[in-house]
Image (tube, rainbow, N blue to C red; front, side, top):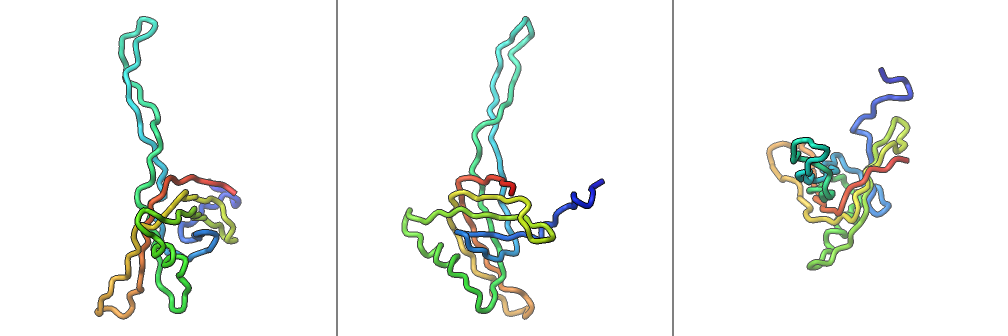
Length: 153
């Protein structure tokens, strides 16, 4: 059983930093760390029958698409997102490191996912539909990156 110092953290308390600027997102997905595997046949030793199949970790796989969702607020400054995707020219892009920080009840970072060399591949506009006046305008930014690492404070 968890003690008072070992409270389970909730997923709703997080923050995202892009280029040192905190941007409020409502959802982040794709922060996976994954390694491939290599399978090979090991030669028999000490008279044991063989060969036997061995699986070992292979190279790390780059993360698949990382998605960041946010509702659009009136008068919110979103230049960090718009300028970033608008700066792409051909194969030239300004890659940035991004941190997704899981926070405790005091809003202190407990665990961070660092997305290394991220760049935007898509900025999806909200779905515009004239049937529900209470639907929030949500935009989604899709990123590709070299890798994701986990950091502790």
